[in-house]
Length: 123
Image (tube, rainbow, N blue to C red; front, side, top):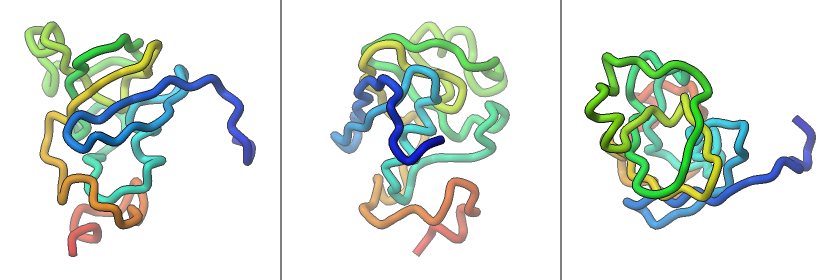
């Protein structure tokens, strides 16, 4: 990716924190969220297998980037707006809430990395 990302983006709003971030329609909601650089963002395998990044879409439209494990999002939950942030991209502005626990709700410190272990992010 170039230094200047020219992809068209839509706004994604996180209900618990009031934060908003831009997200391209061909990138996952989780990828955009990680650009915020905050500690406490629930991230796991980044491939739909762990369910750590479960969110509920309150408003807006999304498209699938890959399959969502029924072990983590049931058909009933999906009907209520739940999905995995690593497996969907926004097509319109989105308002979401993180379904799992936000560690120290989006503390303002910089995240160490998307692959850092949960223990290394605790203080």
